Length: 403
Image: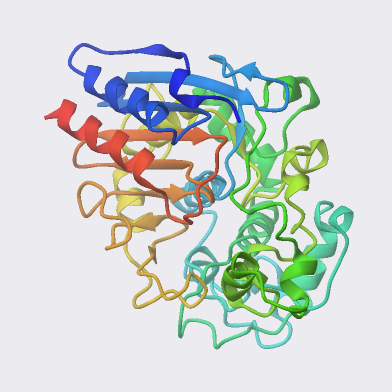
């Protein structure tokens, strides 16, 4: 493993924001990072843009200014922005049944599931039964057909459980039906293009050389085979721990690796096939400054571009769920229309703050009251599903600088 304490940190901070750089450097000095980037916007202007460390531990290549990373569920925030833009244009009604836009979806007890239900993880479709190959899972239509035929795992609207991967196909197919184009294309034309973001849902091959390599928090000894197998002899405590949370019969395991554990192989997330596909819940490829710029344009104007109106932000961030999350180990993780919102697990900034974390630690977040927006990406994944102290310390340093 590369010595992260000796990592080179580059970039800049606006006057008065130097404390953020101190925290960013400290994360490396403590051995918490291998490679990472962080950016912040305040009142529509960039105030922090930092990067450093190693992008790929196999080649030793440094993290450059233009390094990109796959950001897992931080992608959900980008997909939510697309859906909310269609809502503010009057093209998508969150309270309408999904089947109004996607008729075949209404099969098998799903005719009353609303768009708001799928955006807020209340649809009961956190996984699909059966199995399919990774190739099928990455080709869109097989998953759409499986979701059309799926019975909800709980009565829609009665509880919420994190739709870790299915969220992207559910919301993405509604976007496709309404906008007439795939979510990746819609995002490129309506969000990334106007803001000049380096952010793709479906990465062009021309950008492939810029992508860093993810470092999984799951030990190599832990695979779906070992999680499914009965222990022979003395149980391995590490495997038993992961089995309890991520085994093939657990809600979290089924949700994280849907459809049918086709995406359970850790290597696939570092593959060209994954980055080239459109998996709008999990395979966005971007950098920290693009995430921060995108969220800044949700809560204010950035170089003449505003993505969401104030009224749509209010509607999008109104809490639609309550109580423990059935899939996320009963955590207090609450949702609006596609965004995570302020809760005891997300105690960031004002009660109006919102955004989305990605598995391993990446995050995009905005606070309309403080007029702040953040983006954080990294390659060393931590075990948390809702961020960790690396990004929280960085965001707190930005709040201190903004006062």
